[in-house]
Length: 154
Image (cartoon, rainbow, N blue to C red):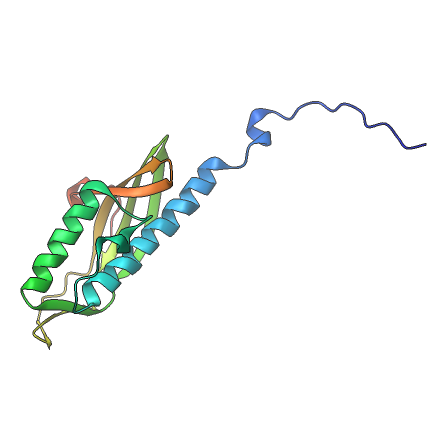
């Protein structure tokens, strides 16, 4: 005869649910890293990629602003080589909104004009602040904030 399963006490809600906050933070960290991968691809290309390069990463105001900025950059004969260093990523989640901050150093991400490196004064790491929103498809980066809004120090 097989044992009959006994009823067990239901687990409290916080134990029954996965660590949503931790998962959101992991998802947003990965999203932010993918954003910078796309920005490197976008700015390092001599040609202007299509906006779908940001699919699943950014939308709305941020997408429009970055595409317009890079289009102007490319139209003036500029592109980049190398990549920035992105460090100290912090994520704060508040429901369906999130704030992502990081220190970004673009000193080794050269700007080229007509194929020649443009000499720029090194700035070192500077804070970047970005808002993300949860959509039906998941998290998307929505807009940037001024560096003065950062609560991190680089």
